[in-house]
Image (cartoon, rainbow over all chains, first blue to last red; front, side, top):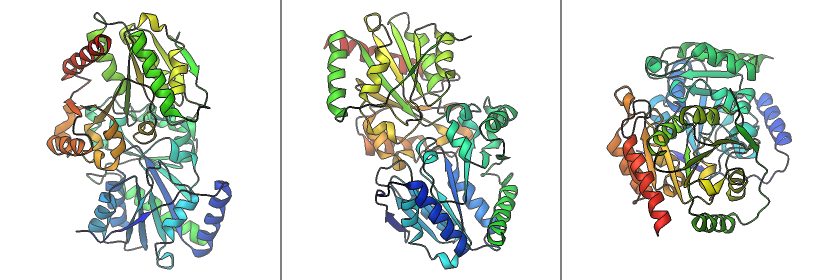
Length: 224
Length: 224
């Protein structure tokens, strides 16, 4: 079933991650490649959301995906099977996040000349990934309804560094105590400019808005 | 509303965490205190589960709780209000896990002579907390149905170090693609001796079994 390329990422030896991230971002700008870093808790629906969005934009943009995980290649396989786009798996060797150098190791295994948009699905974790600039052009995160509306209070840094928050699994809202307005309020306390889009990756609700956001981001990155 | 003690945990300076954890465990044994380390993703229902279980055992055991979080004291307040037992909040200063020395800093702020069972609610994270022995007598974790049945494949270490896995939010099983038998199989691939108890903290389903497990664990720890 499986012709997925698995990259065993080495721990970064660079002391200055911010500097390395800035250099990577400049290189991506020069090459006209937009890198989106997507973060979330385990099981919030990152992969399903990406599949839905990619299938809406892949006729307009050349997209590739890097799936980071401690172990397994289930996500990269899923993406490739469901969308047909290039997808590689990054194994972090037990590490809880990716930094800029680790991200670069992944990018070196893609044909960047053939991509307008690379999506990095970071390790499922609301803490550590928020602390490391991957060199991405933008950070997005997915919070799912079952996790609760209080997460921006408990994981403030994650919500501060993300300019897009997708609120996923809106189909199960009736079964959980989740106040969407209160959640938006908490998110904007952490990051007033964050855009919040409620979606349901399973039914496709709201995914058009996310796809439009992606198209606009890449267009803007290439033109400005 | 808030007379919760908040402890700002300092980063550990001990190089050898395993040694420190073993020493803490010996001390707990000597003092007849059972320390349970509870881990999970953000939003899996740790606090609600603990409230339900504590209310079932607090007439039989003296229980205290340490709530670890990056920020906020919402969980410690909730526990105290809902159970009346001693509850303190540990702030990890952005850190993604607790080690044995940090756990000891928390315990120093409880009256250990007045506790049979101390429950440590670790930072919501399936990666880093699994790597650090806190000195607890046992590790337990909560996986909730909305997170998906494939989590033992993606976060193998977490499932390897936990001898009890509570599968929470069983009430929403009909709305998610979650195969309980497959999940149990994945868990036992990681840890053949792990006990798996399906529960619903919201309705109370299965919590009696967890409470009985806790009572038996503490009895065994004190007597053997």
